[in-house]
Image (cartoon, rainbow, N blue to C red; front, side):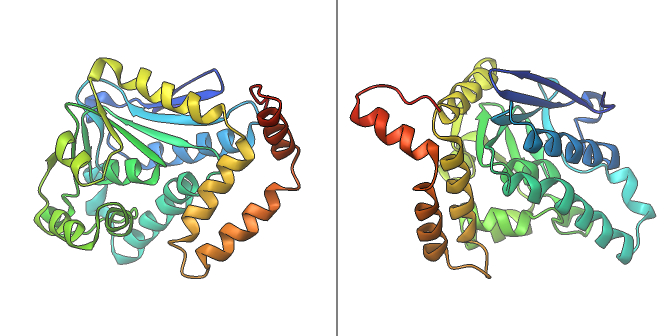
Length: 256
């Protein structure tokens, strides 16, 4: 179905594997296009509750963009490249009402680090490496790296990492808040599935509203507290809330 992706769905989880191991799973136009298509299909499929994104092979999650495409670009087409990626992939993931987990299994550099940061949660294997090396090429991150890295690790650390182009390991990424958990390479997908299954056992509408409310904090056009109040109120009109509260009072597990 896809040239550059493998997809598998079980227990309401769609696992997306970027499958260009010979290129360290670098993001080219085909990968961006197909990621956009699979994200749309996940968002529109009520049988899928959430997704895991990972990379094929033991070496790399995504080792950046496909630099061989860059020499043909000028300011206008460079801007278009960044806009297309943000609109079709990175922003779609961040604002999806379904949880996305990045299972980072090696190099997550440039666009790869940005892809992981667009996901709601990041799980890293012990051999994972993170970095935004764009300044080595006379570039800056173009898929949200300057914004999301600062949100996750703070302004000072984001400036240091992006301006120095230094690469950090999984332990340091965890220490500064870039990743949520560090696990062994052998258990990376298993642990990602375990966490996602826990999330999927909760009210799906409520989970989507959590994502929306937290994203509102970073939207200059919204008041995060006001959005939380609005979304909290909306919950009281749902069958999901009635089932959750009734199950709690009846001391049974809710059936969402």
